[in-house]
Image (tube, rainbow, N blue to C red; front, side, top):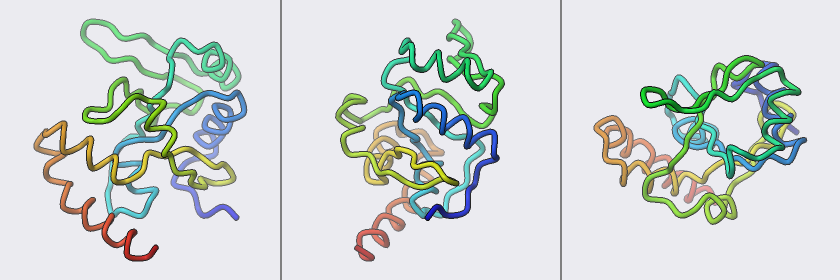
Length: 154
């Protein structure tokens, strides 16, 4: 049974379409941490794709009337339209292994009526440690506490 969703119907429809089309992706970053129970707040949801040139991604975007906007010298790649405003494309996860290796450890978490692949909290922590940005360092204690709680519950 699916739990309450932090996403709108359009956002869930977008995620569902990615899954239906077989697009390989992971939800990463603080959104992934929050989906696992960490008390974190973020303004976007990072999506890490196995291959941004995958024809299945192009098909999913067309189905949802969304578009992929390639990176430029001054702007990272992004998604536009079709319920994608909340989502950011993540092209690199610092301190982690390849997408395939990390995806093999993914958790599957219900979001609305969809099961989505999510990067595990310990791997989010590893990436934030490696990145070392002040905002990542600031959230590390919260994420580490959440991970201890999750491990204790298991």
